[in-house]
Image (cartoon, rainbow, N blue to C red; front, side, top):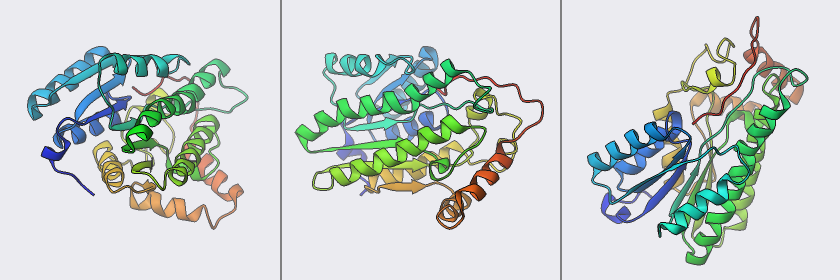
Length: 277
């Protein structure tokens, strides 16, 4: 159920990967509805520009900027400690930061993939654990985890990314069941290919997927935001992505893997990666 701006006064959302893409759009939506912001990413200047612009525009009580490289195992605890030391209570947690790496698994860089696993799984799990314990004491809170439409299917040439997003979806839905008798909700957002920096940073800018029909980040964020506010367990953003997700329950995995490989193929690949923040 959507709340009014007055009802949200004094509430705070923490958003990771908030300096661009979905994260930036989430920040706009929450600020528009009166939420104070804690914005986390590596790009301090971009976070400050976004945060203070939204604070002025929507007359927010406070905006907190936390610069952190979330690929580090200790980052989640550091973020949590910084929030606690400021005396701020987090009402909504948005685990948005994520990354992928394009290429055949036997050719890609293990160190980068381990960083992606930490960013896409380790850090969101730790942040969820830390902030959920506080929410449980209050018996109130909301968590949004950004998964993907590839959560439903094998993802050749992006094997680690697809596997991490499958984890995020399974993890989120398990928590929904565990928390069913509380006033805490967990929502998984499953977008498809989108017009963000993701493909370029994953070394996949010349793939069919990156140059096909792309969702706009603002539309994806709105779908996730509405589902979160309605307490939904899962939302697949975009009609074609909904069709694709349903098809995975009918088609054999070999067929969906072949389809995904076709979308992720390119000529003269140059594999590189950097996380989306």
